[in-house]
Length: 93
Image 1 (cartoon, rainbow, N blue to C red):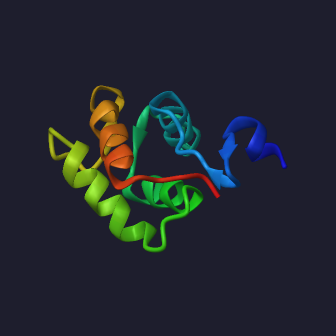
Image 2: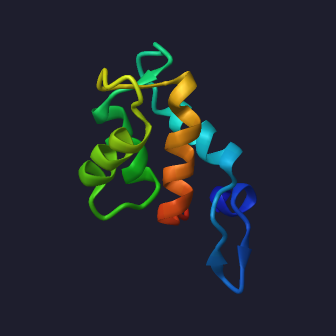
């Protein structure tokens, strides 16, 4: 499985992605390449990360990271989004 090469396991449990890997995952879901993540793009990213409630996680991610309250996570706000995802403890399925 390709994910195991990217995200190694320990005792058959997936290890959490690194902050750089999370950042790259979020950037992958910037589907219109505007360097900003909308709620819908965040929802798809959190779904990929295995969230049972990706819409809720997208809302919480915006709450934690959207410092200028424009409804998007931009490049300057990405670190706060990544910190939120680490705090929640996502692994990749």
